[in-house]
Image (cartoon, rainbow, N blue to C red; front, side, top):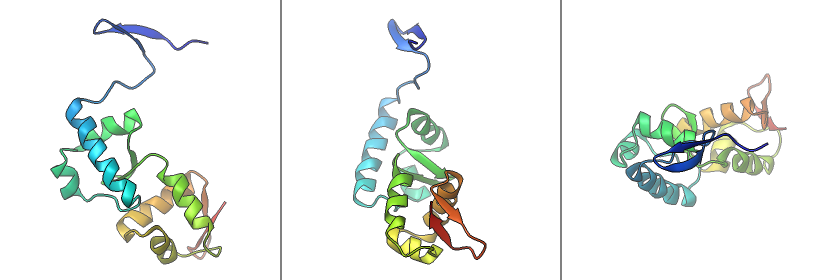
Length: 136
């Protein structure tokens, strides 16, 4: 079945697709993507996001467009980061601690805690009663 179509600004578009990002937001996302490519789990802090011009609205638009993954409020990574994290964590002795995960991902506790919670919700990892986790 074909996607529903509509005419917007003289163009035929798929109405289920997110609207394109405004040019300044797209440019900021490209810059951020370059930074995260080298350090995929070192999410930028609020100061860096502000310097890039990525406020709440811009981050929400980028998330809707599928260009950023919002792990939690103030923690954004590239799409696919959760699968990559699960791959890296699978190489650890199972089960593993938060500290071991943080070290394996080369990130901070600020990023590791919500990322592990996201992995739990997506059923890529499972939290055990003793607070350790295992890759599913």
